[in-house]
Image (cartoon, rainbow, N blue to C red; front, side, top):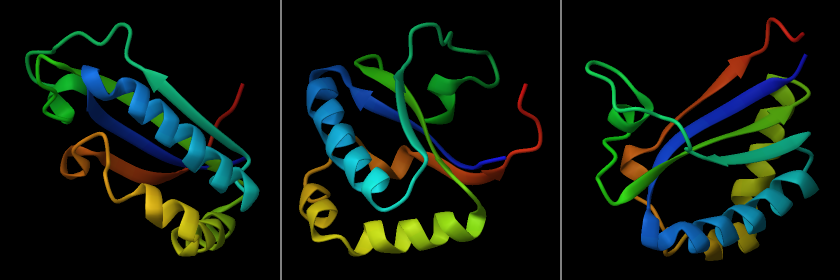
Length: 117
């Protein structure tokens, strides 16, 4: 079963096209270096919860939309190797200079799959 890196972040609505372009560029690099899949989703039904919710988790503002994304790998070891290559890739470094979202509010982490139906 795949190893998964998951991400949740808030993107200003005015920057959605720039974010999508950045994601396409980054996704191609991740896939080239060995990721199994690279998925980006824009929130369509994420109500603001009283205690917890996707918008609360990333402190989304009224003019922002939540993005949920994930990258899959064969294993944690492969993820670590792929990410090392990606982070050293100059094509990615150049595109990280002017991010279309606030990276300080991004939530991310690695997950070991245990069930797939």
